Amino acid sequence: MGGAVRTHVRHPASDGEAEIATVSPSPAVRRGRFLALEGGEGAGKSTQAERLADDLRRLGHEVVVTREPGATTVGAALRQLLLDPDAQLTDRTEALLYAADRAEHVARVVRPALEHGAVVITDRYVDSSVAYQGYGRGLDPAIVLQLSRWATGDLVPDLTVLLDLPVADGLARARARGRLAGAPTDRIEAETRAFFERIRAGFRQLHDTAPERYALIDAAADPDEVAAAVRHAVQQVLAGDGEVLSA
Image 1 (cartoon, rainbow, N blue to C red):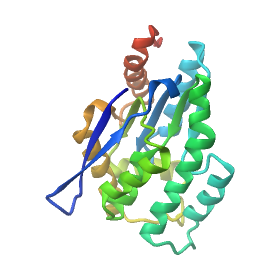
Image 2: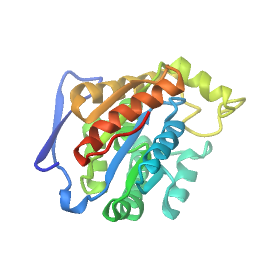
Image 3: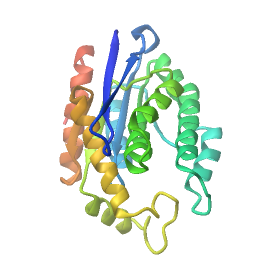
């Protein structure tokens, strides 16, 4: 993954397009593989991350499954603050706190695991900030992206799996699991449906501007079908290593 990666991000409230040139990490620093699962509420990221991890472990890989926010000691404290329904955070403060969590996550968990040769699967990464704080909150997506790229030292996943699901279906799934039963349990869940619609549109815009970086998967399908689609997408990444994921 040498050379520069140029990413275009279009702000939904503007006809203009900002462009940020970033440098992909050196292969010498990344002996492992880095996979990110993204999507809105109820898309099934955690379930699919664990299923994919099981498949990879059967192939003999060391696998690290992690998440954002909250995968480190500092991150856990930040997660508590970020999701506290009583916390009064400005949108910019929220974006900065997510970037701080991501900086710790990459430094403490992701990079060490990659350098050890593991496959790292993260439930949310940079695209979540661009979608939630950029498109959802109305901040400039290009600036949010730049902030996260700086926080991570330009660490880009080998593949981002985008689990796409209509907002109404995702919220219904979340309620069925009890996460949204009664009063919202955190600041994000308390948001309006329009907020989540902007997030979904943001994720799809990210895919459309750089489809080679993503596997866009219909998360409304049966979980087994979704898992098969995820396996197929990851198999393309592993193909260069001479490995095949079994069905």
